[in-house]
Image 1 (tube, rainbow, N blue to C red):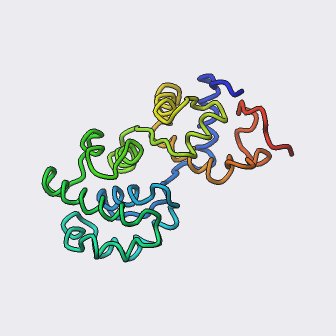
Image 2: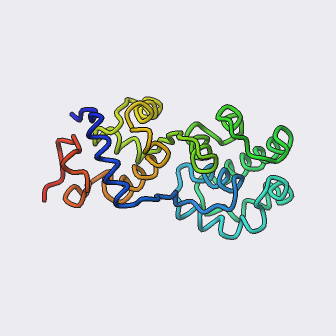
Length: 215
C-alpha cells in the first residue's frame, strides 16, 4: 500500500518534473477561453487527439458563443460526430453557449460555481478552465491524476474530490499551478494504467508504489 509522500519528497518530485519539462501544457487545442471550455467539455470519455481532430475544423468557424449558436446543434453535429456521446455533447455545447450569452455577456466566467452551472461542465472541466485560462492554482483530477496521485503517494484519496484536496494540501505552492499538467503527462506516458514504465520513471526512487515494474 502506498503512503502519502512527505513535504521534502514532494518538493523533490516536482523539482524533477520541472527540470524535465519546465513549461508543461495541456494537449487540447484551443484559441481562447470559450474554445478551451468547449474542448474540455467535448473531451469527457474521449481522447484529446480525437477532440483536436474534430475541433480543427470547428473552431475556425465557431470560436465564440454567438457563432456557436449561429451554427446550431444540427450544424455542430457533423464536426463532432467522431467523438463519443456526440449528440449529448452537441446539445450541451449549444445550451452552454446560450447561457454564456444570457448570463455572462458571452464571456467565460472565472468562478467555479458559475462554470459548473453550465451544461456539460463538471468540477474537472471548471478546474481546467480556471487553471489554464485564468491562472488559478486549481487541481483538475482526471483518471491519470487520480491514478498517479494514489499510486505514487503524491496525492492519495478515495475519490477525485479527495485527491483534489490532497493536491491542494500537499503539493508545494510553487508547483501547484502546473502540477496537474505534470501528473497528467506522467500518467499518460510513463505511469500508465496496465504496465507502468517504472524503469524509465524519473521519480522511481521516491514513488511509494510497492508493485513496481521490474528492470
